Length: 135
Image (cartoon, rainbow, N blue to C red; front, side, top):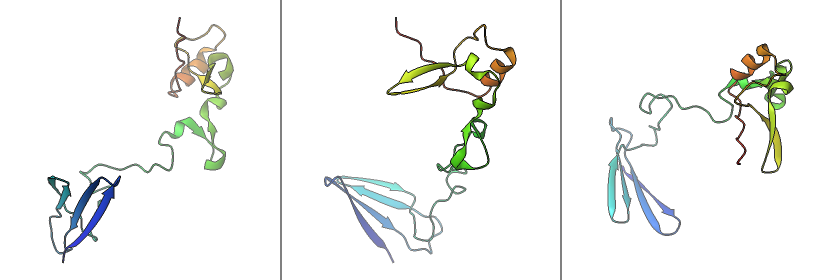
């Protein structure tokens, strides 16, 4: 039993997706858009792609940051930037204004006031680099 769904894209292009019966082992899909037809894998209502079935790659969830070293704390509502735990971080980082907000950035070179231990820790954190001023 085939089910056909029609999708209207911007009221200009109509695309037809044909979903196959669940008894098919190799799912295929035919996409018809105006004058062209593209044959790809068909998706049945019982066979939806999962993170393991998409070419063997993992799909990361977008709800949480992937680099936990940037944030500190056990409660996501109160996470703070990890650089705040580095002693003398203010002596090492610079501040820059960008579109109405001001934040810390990582300079290219270590300042003379910045302790070596703090500089090394901050370099490992992959912080936002400072933008060079235009001359």
